[in-house]
Amino acid sequence: MSGSVLFDTPGPRTRRRVLVASVITGVLLLTALTLVVLRLVDRGQFDAELWAPLLNPATEEFALVWGLIGTGLSLTLRAAVVAMIASLLIGVVIAVVRLQLGRVARIPLVGVVELLRGLPVVVTIVFVSVLLPRIGIAADPFWFLVVGLTAYNCVVISEILRAGVVTLPRGQVEAALAVGLTRGQTMRLVQLPQAFRAMLPALISQLVVILKDTAIGSIVLTGLEDTLYQGDLIRRNLDNPLQTYAVIALIFIVLNLLLSRLAVFLERRLSRSSKSNPAEATTVAEANAT
Amino acid sequence: MDVITENWDLWVSGFLRSLGIIGWALVGSLVLGTIVAVCRVSPIPLLRVLGTFYVSVFRNTPLAVLLFFIAFGIPVLGINASFYVFGTVGLTIYTAAFVCEALRGGINTVSPGQAEAARSIGLGFGQTLTLVVLPQALRAVVPPVGNVQIAMMKNSAIVGAAGVGGDLFSAYNRLTSAQGYSFLPTVTGMAIGYLLITLTAGALLALAERRLAVAR
Image (cartoon, rainbow over all chains, first blue to last red; front, top):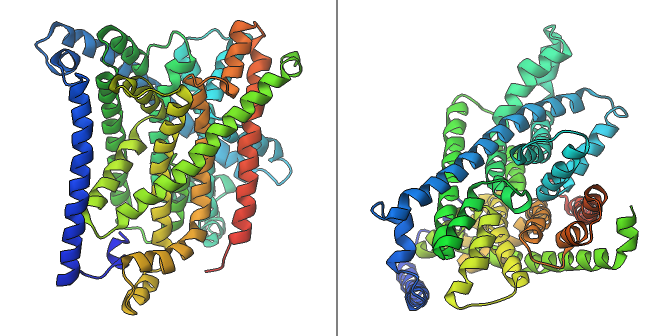
């Protein structure tokens, strides 16, 4: 935290000033909150009939509504997990190949990587859904989503890993080669493990991105009954968009926070014995975490 | 590639509309993100909590869900606007959370001695931040904030896909569904449109990084 560096430990006068400022912001916030709540009440948004199907297990719609959300969520999660695993695997391969190729030989690969990185993932998903049937692969929209997400995220992950390998101290490779490891062994046993560890925050951020991006699915793919599709169905029937989308957003927030928590946990476990400085890695992590 | 030459006007107007969304979201998210970042490092605990809450909510909500929440949820409250406004606002709110984090990362790169020195000569929080830390953080912040904004440009396609109307994505939808052009060339046209935006932005950012690079 930089907070403690930016201001002194407050003395009595500052404490008073902070207290006054806190009270003022508190009052302003409360006023804003009250206005919003009043508006919500005014529009009948706290009416039981809007919330009950989502929150009260006693209502008859409850089971149905959560059944729909569950179906959607299971599809979303399956797509996310498959895309995450595929992106990681292909990402490693691309990173390794790009690092092993010579200056000229890697030009086509770099071109493809830059192209995929520059395209919005929605466009990539649409592209895949158009291209695959065209070349004779008639697949379920689920696979269009997975392939689209993977195409975008595997190159991002490969770039993260490559940055991890490139920023390793040169001595690592030299030592590995000196003890007689081949180039392949050096990559597999020395460079990649360290790159993975240094880039873990960035990698997990990218996994969060994949999970969030699965939500795009049903917007551009017809017949994909994911979480947002089911949410659309629910709000059409119950006429409660505010409530339905708030619940769906909350589900995603909890899932993503859990993933991020996992990242913190892993990082702490892995960095117990490590002396390397992950500052540079974290900058990359922040840059990619969108 | 007839689909591009025959519908040049539609593509150009779609391109400009997309640039419009991007322009508003760029300015809006920089302003809002800075405000949230200042909240997150401020001495007032309530503001810090508020800033942290903002970031954890909007960084973890998928943009698509946020857009649907705004587009369908806000009119329920009696506030009506066009999808263009709702979409741009959604993109701005979402991106601001990432801008805030990038700025905070930048503030952390300024060595603590700078802030300590500023405080020891009697500058307060506001002065320390605006006169000493932020000017230095600004350089360090250009690459991450730039990357956040390039990601925003890509995310503007989600706003388009959600149905803003009149942008690049809806040009694709209109040409394929209403006018019956074949999908592959049309989607390629759309892809070229977005690549023009993101690759140009990427090149500009690389240029800015080289200009601002400073040996530490």
